[in-house]
Length: 55
Image 1 (tube, rainbow, N blue to C red):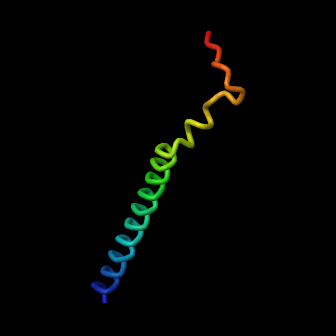
Image 2: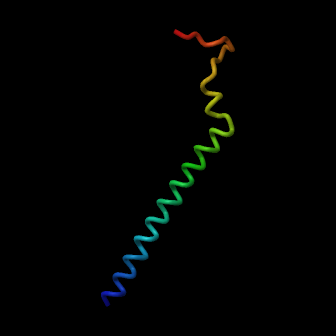
Image 3: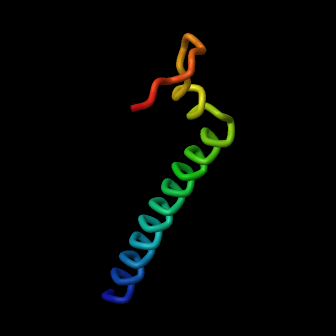
């Protein structure tokens, strides 16, 4: 009976770790996709088209 409980616990732990790894990979891929598509660059531009002033 203890082997059965241990194996179920191991399967549950592996599933949890696997799910977390997949979620992290999707978040990372989404971030990279946004950077490649230029979405980040669009938000940093000056709306009027004038060059930004520097100090």
